[in-house]
Every structure is written in C-alpha cells, then in structure tokens.
Length: 471
Image (cartoon, rainbow, N blue to C red; front, top):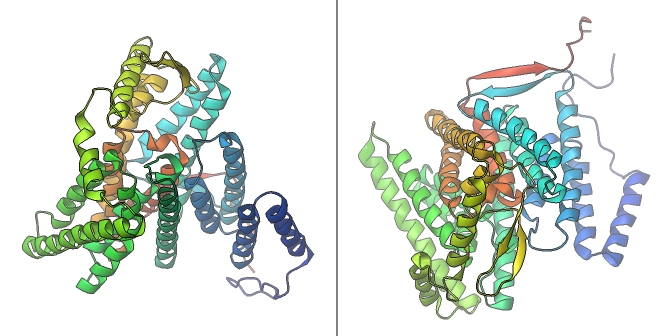
C-alpha cells in the first residue's frame, strides 16, 4: 500500500535541495549584473513554486501579473514577449499535469462558439499574413495577444472554489496597486501625463470588477471597504487623464447599476443601495483628487481635468487636441486600405506607412487606435462580425451569472459583464485586446465567469482513462 493516502499532498522538505540553492545564486547574479528587479522576480517565482509547486492557477496568475506590465513603448518588446511566452509554455505544462488523462473541457455557453471561431480565424489570418509577406514581428505581437485571449478556455475548463476566487481577486487588487505605484511615481517625476504601461487599461477593468462587489456587499461597512479597495486602481485611471478611460468607466458604471437594480423583486431597496454606492463612488473620486493634488503636486487638477474633457471633440491641430487630429488621419487612412480587401482583410502582420502632413515625417504602424477598424483591416468584415458576436457572447455569459445563489460568484460574473461593456466602449478609442496588459486580467475574469455561468460542457479527451480496477 502506498505511503500516501488518496487525496493527500506530498510533504515538502523544510530545507531546500541543491537546485534551489543554485537558483538563489543565480538570482543574486542577476541582481548584480543585470537588474535588481530580475533577481527579485526569480526569487518570488521560486518561493511561489515551492509553496504551490506546478499549480496551474498559480502559474496563470503569475503570467497575468507579468503580462500586464509588458511595455509596448520601448525597444525591448520582442525580448519581453519572448520571456512571457516562456512563462506561457510553463503555465500550459502545469495545466497538462493537472488534467493528466482527463479531458479538455470547454463550458458550453453563448461565448463558446464565437470565441473558438475567432481563435481559428485569427490563426488562419496569421498564416495568410506570413505567406503574403507581412511583417513576422508585427504578426507575432498580434498572435501573442490572441493566444492570451484563448487562454481563458483553460481557466474556464475547471470549476473554481470560493478560496481560489478570493485568491484571484486579491492578486488582481495587488496588481492594480502595482500599476498605481508605477503610474504615480512616473507622474510625480515628470509631471506630464503619459500613456503605455504606466497607465494601461488593467486598472480600469479591475475597478469595474470591484465596483460590482461593492454594489452587492451585504452591509454598508462592507460596501465602504470595497469602495476604499477600488480607490487605488480608480486613482490610477483618473491620473492617466485619458478621456477614453473616463467615458468607458462612466458607461460601465451605469450598466452595472442597471443590472443590479433590475426590474423584479425589491427594486426600491436595490435602488437605494445603488444610490448609496454612487455617493460613495463620487466621494472616492473627489477624495482621490484632493489626495493626488496634495501628494503629487497637481495644483490645478480641476483645471487639467476640465481641459481634457473640453478637448474631447476638438479636431483643430493644437497641443491639447493633436491626438484627435492624428487619430482622424489614421482612421481615414486605415479605412481606405480596408476598402482594398473588405471581406477578408490583409492578414496579421500587415502594416502601413503614416505620413504627417504638417512635418512630412513617415513612420510604420501596424495598429489602428480604433480597435474595430483594426480588426476589419486585418481580418475583414468576416473577422469584425465574429469579433462583435464574441463580445455579445461575453456579455451574455456574464449576465447569466447574476442569478447565481452565491453572492461572490454573482459579483464576479456581473463585474465581468461590466468589464465587457467597458471594453466595448474603450475600443472606440484604443486597441486594448491587441496588447497583453488588459487582455490577461480580462481573460482571467471571463474564464472564471464562463466556468460559473455555464450549465453544460464540451469535452475533448486526448487519452482514454485507464481500464485497470482501483486498488
């Protein structure tokens, strides 16, 4: 008889074995000769693996954290994505170990079919783009983002325990705090708004998830605590001075309130709680403005905010509205190229050369800030149709969770539906799901949502179960 009883975990020795000592020496060397952050990262990963060895969820959360900090604005993007791909491969290895001889299970729900079709279509358009001579570098960047979105199927293939859900929620909140610190330190240093990894959409999607937890908190004290928790990523979102974030959050908050209040049951009581939540949310916003003005030295924070809002519709060329000018120029150019092949698009890796009419400066560009135009340019009307179908399915999957009996599962699912609405609006101004920063947190949220809200599954077995009798 085995020394280990069924279901028991193997005992982890207290003193690490020699490979762990070698790993520690390597971490010290990385800190001294490469970068201190590299050594710290290796130590953290080693500790995580020692505490939860080869655990799929843990490895996935590590990848979510790393992927959210990928900087698309510097010259090391290829290196960063290569390292991230290594962690993705390790995460896949952990998943295969966890499933063993079981099957690959996909929840059957409104988002399943369009997601699978979009994954297959994107892979085909990547191959088509490479055969057509498109850029392998740009195509690889787009392919990695698609693989990140596809990874939600692995998250959705397992039933989550309440402990795991809370574990993931804490990691997301810590991730939001990390992004806030990065953005706040950067702003306090240069005193000028910047974008990219310093102010990505990750904080916004985390804010919307936490807002739905606050709405459904059983007590007023609990609601206040949730609002204080979301104040950190919300402050980061506000500090970005990005109008697209603000508009998307405003609409997603209205959507969250409408879903929570509903049309049946005790509507009046829920409307009262929603009013309290809005008041607390507004208090968090104004309190955060005061704190940011005092700590980061933004003395004219109200003036800066109003100026950003006032410049939203401007199309003349000025310092405040030049982004509007260039995005209109970019969209018009991309639409013209889309019309050359409107049905199938040009494939992944396709890029075009932009010309600044004021300075005659030329530059290559594989992206379009308007995400829907970007999808149409690369994958045609077919790809755009599947993309819209997929997001409709995502929203329906989240809303299906509002009837779950467990309040935490309900909050997670409806929060994810609000995140979908946030993305749908923000994709009018940017391409959040063509990068890993926002895609990874969203994939984590939607994967768990599909696992909770589905009632049936598709199963694909890669090896039959053993026919030997137990014992």
